[in-house]
Length: 193
Ligand code: GAR
Image (cartoon, rainbow, N blue to C red; front, side):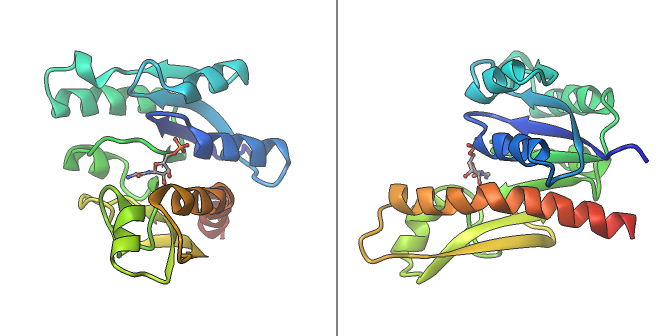
């Protein structure tokens, strides 16, 4: 059987994308990456993917007139790779409902909080300010509502007394790098049952 194909969307450094590449290389994640796509031309993750010999594409959202026209072009680009799963890995764009429906049940995201807590941005500072004892990250199926949709897997870390948003983010990110490959594996195993 052919391995499931991923398209990974990034906007920046792409460390979660790299963790997926490394899991594949280590033989612990039986998938292939059809392409890595960025909405920012200078995303560091694109350089990494190019050097790793992965097909890349850049669709600069700034060169589109509207969110709708960008999302339509992005959906067409993704479709051209015929992926089984579309993986948002630090893709910092709000997606239109049409886009989300187009990839219904095959679009996943990693969010740096224990959903349903702390949807949106600045999750680490907000967790500290709220006096949380525990924080973490969630991989979830994307639905039309922002940072909503069924959770596939979560990873938890303690919030320490002297944590800043930066130290907490680093502790969470370390877990994200294990969580995303594990969640993709789980989804693939669940769908092949
Ligand atoms: C990650 O921490 C990810 O959870 C977060 O952005 C970072 C991207 O890092 N995503 C969101 O905040 C989505 N709303 P990376 O580019 O190194 O993977």
